[in-house]
Image 1 (spheres, rainbow, N blue to C red):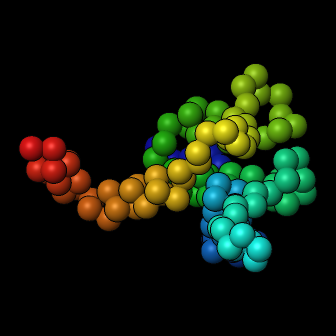
Image 2: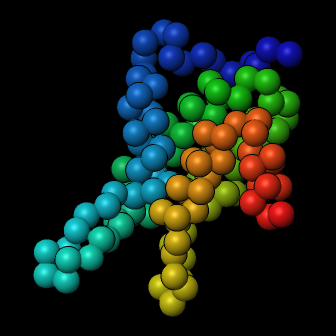
Length: 131
């Protein structure tokens, strides 16, 4: 099944590398070290800012480009739900976690990348470590 959505990177209008950078910034923010306490701090794009909109548009292009084998209805629904000004009845929203809860996303990300690197052997490794 071929997707009805445009293949934006073939025409050279957008850079996939730049879109990936923007999407990573959308999801993970930028890390900085506070000079005074010396702690790592994560800053995210301001909600409803032009920067956040550009990052959402980049993420939509990536999803469109990379998920061509996804059902057209699911792909269309996913992309439409990311559009803040759209008429789609549902919307995916990114919001900050409650400050009281410890955000452990760097650890979660490291685990996800480790499992991804294991590839098909991930299930075997998990079974061996739990035994």
